[in-house]
Length: 223
Image 1 (cartoon, rainbow, N blue to C red):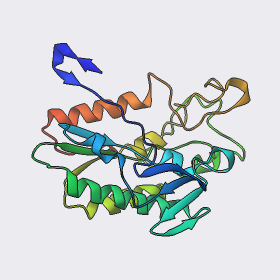
Image 2 (cartoon, rainbow, N blue to C red):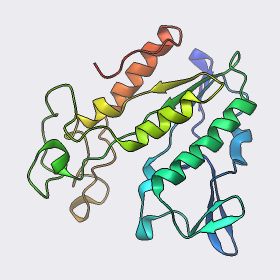
Image 3 (tube, helix red, strand yellow):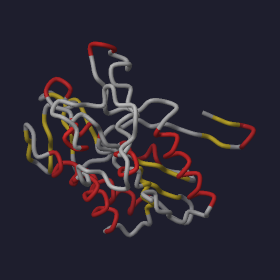
Image 4 (tube, rainbow, N blue to C red):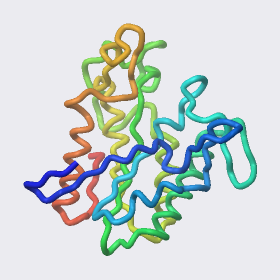
């Protein structure tokens, strides 16, 4: 997409895992140590990466038939371990292919879900459906998501400076921000993972804008 008035070109490149998902004779294979599609990311002034949502899917919603690491194929594995391996592959690609003097790199943090009301001290079986108010206070009762620690651990070991848009905790407080039964599937579904628009993602965009205006300096998103 081009915005000629601002001399800006914007490209949305969808790869839910960042690493390669390929179709072979055995089936769909998620390759944790391969990024062939990375050439599409070169040459930009700014890159914003994001992944996690699709790593959690199970059953018929799972995007792969096998996970490959090195020469070994796995029917499945611990999702946090797989996520960590895939993210390390991405980090090596960034360190090897991105010139930080030309390209600013950001990683949008983990977007939380609200399917388990026990996380915010609600009754058993509660989800985001019928929730109309955010969680009060400054901390999420259910605690931090393990995937956040994976992201921060990988970023801390990179030689390229990557700005973390740490939107997780502020989004955890918004149990009221999902489409729930008013999403695409209507009464047949209950979407507590995507967000209403306008809504929480607009806040993420405001923080990104603030960081860019401040010259790329990080700000505390969880005040």
